[in-house]
Amino acid sequence: MKESQQFCTFSIEEQHFAVPVQSVQEVIRYQEMTRVPLAPAVIRGLINLRGQIVVAYDLRKRLGYPELQENRKPMNVVVRADGETVSLLVDEIGDVIEVKEDCAEQPPETLQAHMRELVQGVYKLKDQLLLVLDTEKTVAGGEDSAARH
Image (cartoon, rainbow, N blue to C red; front, side, top):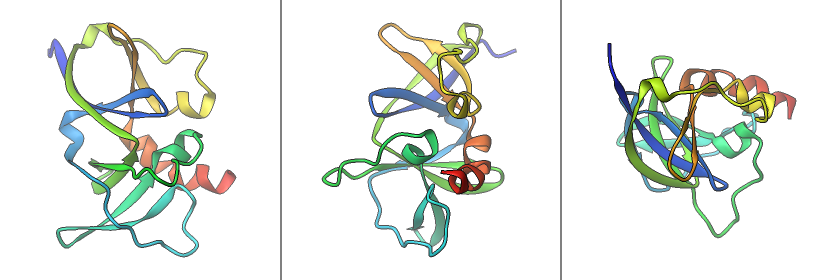
């Protein structure tokens, strides 16, 4: 049984999120995107990642945050989810951290319901809460939730 787990961390609106490091392919700066006509709002566009076409999901929209200011560009956390490579657009990239698995807690009741269903665990760090996203649910539900917003 593993005693600790590593996470790739990032932030959106001063809130700290993470995904398991084993699901991360790479982290890259902003890439130009091609819009997809009639795509749900959560799908920001397509990026060309060394010849591979990758769908870019806007985590701000997916999590219910306002759009990023025009003068700021999102970063890409490229992950493997549901057998596909996708990009999660985030405000800032953090560090890779290691935490003890037994320190994980359930998402707090104070989180909005749509966000709580995407968070698989919470870690209390020294000066912040770290919300661990379920990448499969975050990507799989994106089309449905975007249609409702």
